[in-house]
Image (cartoon, rainbow, N blue to C red; front, side):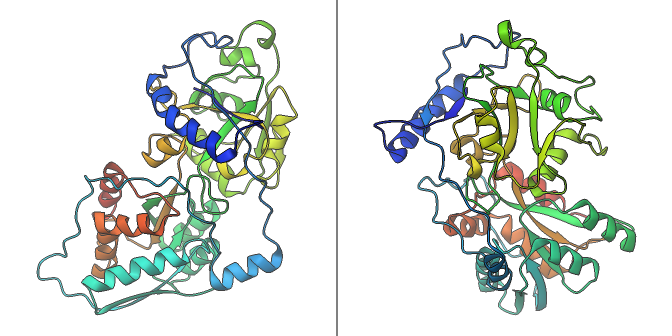
Length: 397
């Protein structure tokens, strides 16, 4: 299934968006893996045209400093909201466990309010435990403080920077523990929106696989094995077969760039590297406009930055999977493979347990009651039960 963002006359953005979401569920369910030729849509695919989003402006230096000191002011919640997974385990304090003590940490500027709400709810179960975060609010600063042992934990709204992990490992001899505790947002600007790949609105491509992305963007080719350079390499025929794929990307280091590098280009503990020939930009803001102006263009960005008429491409993560469109429903259900996660980072020595209060706090956050706090906050997406199970395994010695 493809989703094209384009101006639509005579239809309000809200109505167009609502119609697309209502119909998208069935379309995704019917989607089949990509076939050899993708030039002509022959599978009854439904394509809904909706207006591009309003362009977001980068924070000014004054706004960035305000966010570091007070936390960033988040946008209004999405009209659509997820449903809490009923299979999430209930939080039950461990029998005979009496917790007390104070723990200080740091957080990204977009996580301040949510972190404080989680602390408040946890305190209703364990009134003698105090958790706190303090400014400056920035995940990168918090990661540095974790290495210096000036904080007990840090909430980070993205994957840690490679330099942060390397510095931590150099000091302690092992990596920091990064526990996924909730999903990112869908398309909230600045609040860890999901990532999508897109092409020009006239491009007939219907889906793209992780292997194809690796073949296009990577020099290490840890998934693909051999490079791809033309649209014919992706299965297009006719006039598209010999046309070059013009690649756009975000200059390292950047949270979006690191996410794609880790999720797609890296494999089996080996770090993927970008190939030469990509048009890199310092920020994500211009990605959609580049592709809207380039019929042979392919790029990725956060969904909050789709502010030009481009065509979003469904993603196939594993061979045999159905293509997953970057719809709200798929992100909320964690079936879209480029949905993002928010992490609680802490120093945990392999083979040992965390301090009891920290471990119990994470057990709470990964429970139905903890994820209800996330749902009530209404900016981020609660974990599904299978995600919470995987995160709980990380707490084991």
